[in-house]
Amino acid sequence: MVINEEIKILIVDDNLGNLLVLEGILEELECNIIRAMSGNEALGLTLEHEFALVLLDVQMPEMDGFETAELMRGSERTKFIPIIFVTAISKDQRCIFKGYEVGAVDYLFKPIEAIVLKSKVKVFLELYKQKRMLKTQAEVLEAKVKELLELKETNFHLENLSTLDGLTGIPNRRSFDQFIEMSWKNSMREQQTLALVMADIDYFKAFNDNYGHLKGDDCLRLVAKTLVTSIKRPIDFVARYGGEEFIAVLPNTDKIGALLVAERMRRNIEHLAITHEHSMVASCVTISLGITDIIPQQADTILELIQTVDNALYQAKQLGRNRVFVASF
Image (tube, rainbow, N blue to C red; front, side):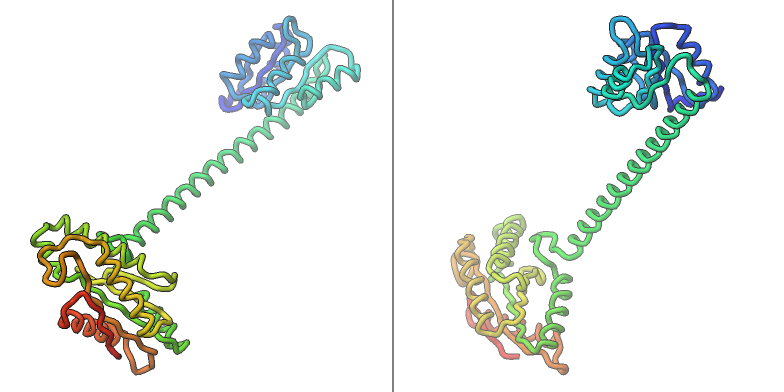
């Protein structure tokens, strides 16, 4: 007899002879047959094993088959195990209805017809195999979905690492290059004005030299956060350009709009009141800013636009810092 330890059938009868008859009929099937001689013993075994089917005698002392089935249906662990009643009681309709009411899937009457029993049991064994196969497939699918989600999260994290500045957490130079390219094409196609604002922390080297690089990093993070919160439109963009330099891209904005944004940035940084005793322009950290705008034409280039705003920033520094200088392209 081939025994599959994974597939178990519970046979329950208070008569050992009946159990042996059932076992003899089912021994050809690929299943592991476990006996119980009372309802209580059967319930205990359902806590230890997973059964594909229960063959349950109706007439048993202490706890009959109906009560045993009802208790099985009331448990989350056993509520879905198919139960076939095996009984010698009359085929009275009331008894049959009661059996179905407490959860039986079928009735077999003694004396048992071996062919009928085996055919019915085979059906439930096959259903159990399919259920286990579906469960296994679902677990594999769930594992694959989990793996894909973890991979997506990892890719998202790696993408963020490649587009966000590691120190300040705002977009980095690479991200700026991608955004300005997209904004340039849109502005050229729509013939809309595109403005740039470039900012530089005044006398930041002196700040680093005198307060240390940890304080310098804290200053950069706070300035970056403040510059980002100084823009109001979702389409605007601020990035760390390099060192203590930051750059903002303002689509569909001219010099007048950019000047308003730049002045807001300058004031917001000043209002942070980060002590800078070694600045030659104020007692706190300040920034200088350059502005330019353009309606891109075929002959124009992004590099020329950046050079123009960089020259504007240089002029702001030359004129005393902590100010905004506007340059024409």
